[in-house]
Image 1 (cartoon, rainbow, N blue to C red):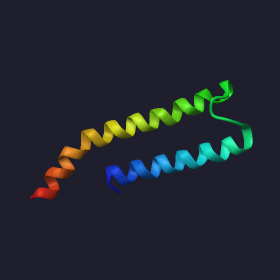
Image 2: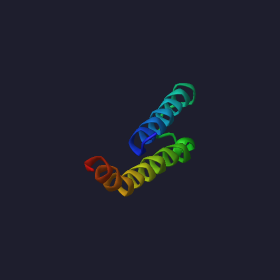
Image 3: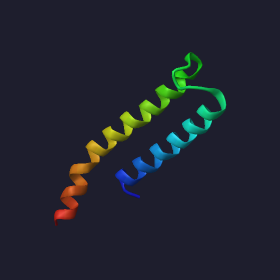
Amino acid sequence: MGVRSALVHTLQSAETQVKMNTDIIGPLWDPNRRSEVTYVLQLVILGLAAELAGFPQIKAANVH
């Protein structure tokens, strides 16, 4: 699984989980939910960093 597809899968899973929890508990801006929002944002940031770090090698590998 490539970096991009892994990132997309992770974000979709996190988004689904957040939506399910939001339907049950309440809106994301609820103070009790901030840790979950922070967790998802960390996933996004880590995923983007991983893609930025890995993308040049993937691109170079595709050229040859």
